[in-house]
Amino acid sequence: MIISVRVWLRMIKLILIFLVLSFLFYKMMGWLDVMTFPSDKYGTPEGSAVKAFHHDELTQGEGDSIVERLKMFYWYGE
Image 1 (cartoon, one colour):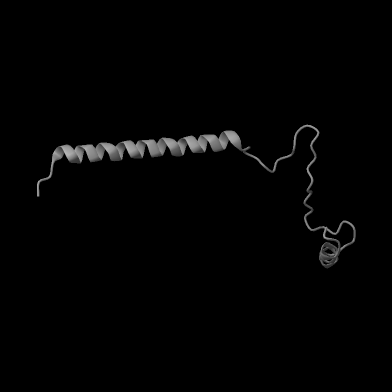
Image 2: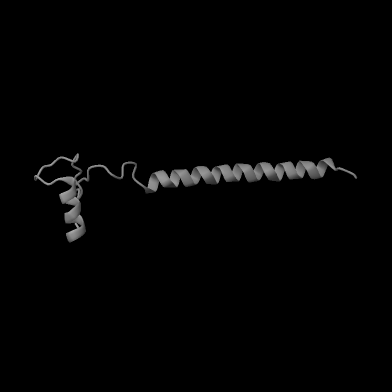
């Protein structure tokens, strides 16, 4: 079996080009992700927007227990 150096060099060159282009594509997709999506999706809204969800730390603000709140959720769907 004859192994040609020219064929091996061509294969190594193609593999290197493929790896470099794959790496560049990966970096470009990461850059596109950073540019497209905000870094803090759950931050306080700006302008006239309002945040629709306010997380209480399971306090009993209105006198309702967890069980009562769960019953209301299943009954009214809220």
